[in-house]
Length: 136
Image (tube, rainbow, N blue to C red; front, top):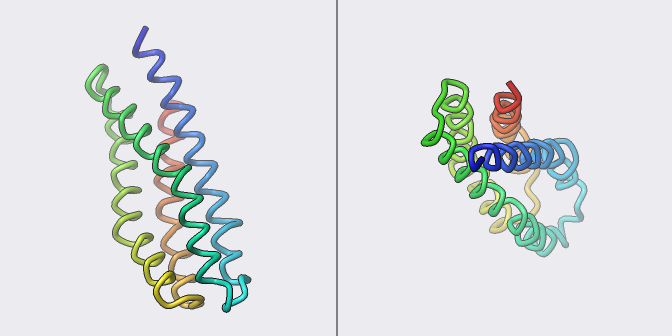
C-alpha cells in the first residue's frame, strides 16, 4: 500500500519537474534576453526567490520518493531514474547555479544567459528521462 502511494507521488512530482523544466527551457530562460538591462538585477532576484519556492520542495520530494522506492523495491529502471535525478542535480549545482550567481553579480549578460540556456538542455533531458522511466 505504501509503495503504491509513493509511486503515485513520485509520478506526480516527476511530471511536475518535467513540465517545469520544459517551461523554463522554452519560455522563461529565453525571456531573460528581453528583460531591460537596467531592471535585470531586481527582476532576476525576484525570479530566483519565486522559482526556488517551487523547485526546491519538488526536488527534495522527488529525491525522497526515488530513494524510498530504491529501498522498497529496487529495479533497474528505478536505478536509472535515480541516476538521471542525480545527474540533474549535478548539472544544477555545477552549471546552472553558477550561471545564476554570475547573472546576479554582473547583471544582464547575453553570454551568460546563452550559456544558461545551452546547459539547461542537460537538465531538461535528465528530468524528462526521469519521467519517462517512471512510466515504463
